[in-house]
Image (cartoon, rainbow, N blue to C red; front, side, top):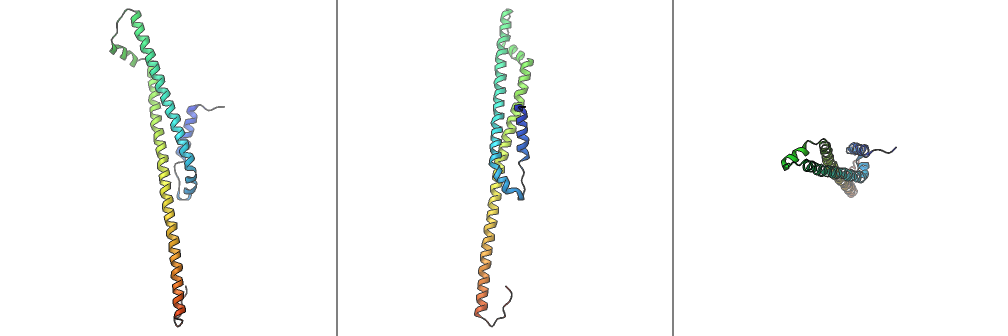
Length: 170
């Protein structure tokens, strides 16, 4: 059975939101999956934007159609209506109210999708910072180990040179 686009979008959003967090122990897997998650977030954003654009188109089309119908009804009845009257009639039209509500929901989903995409940009940046810090710590550790080895070599040379000194443990 095929999922509805709304259910699929909801599942994608839930999966993305559940994938945001990572711990110090899961930095490497988080970094590895980040590109795929960012792609999914971008595709989610595009799908939601498409739904918002369709909702806008549906509303505008229905509004224009209903505006023409109202004008034609007034003309057929031999009455003249004002632009203000026509606008007010459009504001209370049940079909347009329903479509306006769908458009508002699509706007909210659109803003949420922007935030989700931004979260994954922030996640990427955070992972890069963690990677740099870990890299710097590894470099410092290697430098410290190298310097420690040099000090031990010099210590040993001193003991060898001054064999009269009692050698202490390394």
